[in-house]
Length: 315
Length: 252
Ligand SMILES: Cc1cc2nc3c(=O)[nH]c(=O)nc-3n(C[C@H](O)[C@H](O)[C@H](O)COP(=O)(O)OP(=O)(O)OC[C@H]3O[C@@H](n4cnc5c(N)ncnc54)[C@H](O)[C@@H]3O)c2cc1C
Ligand SMILES: Nc1ncnc2c1ncn2[C@@H]1O[C@H](COP(=O)(O)O)[C@@H](O)[C@H]1O
Image (tube, rainbow over all chains, first blue to last red; front, top):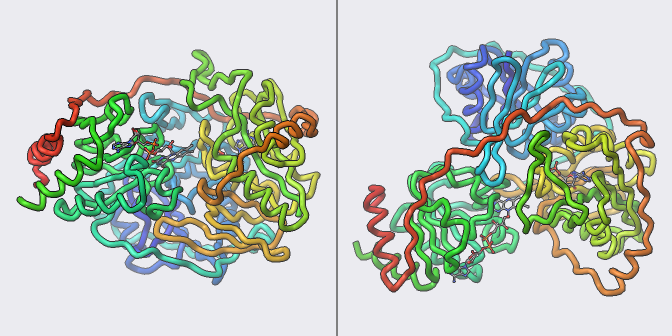
């Protein structure tokens, strides 16, 4: 029996949750732990993707709800004893999974890209930027907790009926549950979303300055591309975190990924190496990004990009 | 405020990592460095301690080696360190590590426990939450900005689309993102002082934690690799090659 934890986002069930739910159908009829306000439409979507049963956890007004949801889940899991509980490698999922692991005394495997249940539960992870694949097996009694990276599985509806939904009251976890939400801020974003765009233009420290990210935006316009970034320039404050591609950012698989002034550190590669076509511009011919590029241009972004933008704008 | 900062010594990321061929554990040389990610946690700790007349204690688990990584954090200004080093902890999972750190931290009644969001070599990214649950405290995670106001800690928690502002009363755990602050460089005096600062080394037995690891790496294989493409030096015509590729991919 597989359980899938799914967080509600602004647009309904989290995309990564539906990907994992699609995968979980292979492991038996999946139960969803749904964390958020919930709605008929959201539950219908979960059913469509194969959930037969839903336990619905609603965070109390003003609370992050993380510790309370964890306590409720631990009780449910003790009662129903699922074989595996699957989470996405996202912020809220990590918060709940980590706490649940400690509360139940169960080990957890992070950064999974695949999970199999024949002859024990095994999880595949990537090492060294995806150069090696590692299989780790659980030992001891379940439930086995697994965090799976976004985009590891395609999300495919199965046309399932509406699931049975059980509202689960959240206990008061005491001081551990004292984190309160006092405000929120949503960054303006324009253009196509990174996760959905067919073409991504990404920039790194090789651009030299925050202003030079304008070149990335100019190139994106004629290609209707989304813009991405390395952690180096997110940390430097040149662009918001929502543009970060890589291990701690987004995982993307566009038709074309153009990396401009990006070295190709393994933490960046894991987020983009499965793009259909990769083009890289870097002035250092030894840059690791060339190891995954279908076309590598050894050159200066300030020379190549303006010419490329002009060529595309004139088409 | 009494502050604990979880820091990790790791093999220098600049040199290639090696796995033990039988256990698949990372081989940890005698000479290790402070995980760059933890410099942010140390800096945040030092800033809060500076504002509140507090102290910063480093807490770490792993092979001591020559203590170079711990000394790097002490040289930034931390007051002392607790290090749990035990042969039996080799290949520990994050839960075991969290149990060890919790056992080292709990008796000291810290107001704030700080950790990174993920380590460079392990990157399980869930240890801070496990630790918070074991300590019975709230977790303010993925902080990109931190304020302490009396006994309330308030952070901006990174989200996929922006941030949430969340707060909790102490005792509390905070996990910090890289880029949250600009870590200071150790001064010469800091480096000299670090040599004299107390490092309290313990074993798992000292802490009364029994070790049980319920996961085991069974296989490591090379991933199917991408076929290497062409790399050409730009001679003023690099953009034309790119346009041709984009045509081939049918995106223009
Ligand atoms: C736990 C952890 C998680 C991480 N997660 C992520 C993540 O999610 N995403 C991520 O991206 N990184 C991540 N990183 C950081 C990663 O290790 C690298 O530091 C980062 O990706 C480097 O970014 P960069 O390529 O922009 O910069 P650099 O590595 O500094 O590379 C800049 C490149 O630009 C080239 N260059 C310079 N000038 C020019 C020019 N004029 N024209 C052309 N090329 C030029 C240089 O040759 C160089 O190759 C993580 C690190 C850790 C420890
Ligand atoms: N062995 C360790 N000793 C001390 N702190 C650790 C250790 N492992 C992880 N941490 C802390 O937990 C954070 C997340 O680590 P990880 O779970 O490995 O991604 C790190 O940034 C550290 O602050």
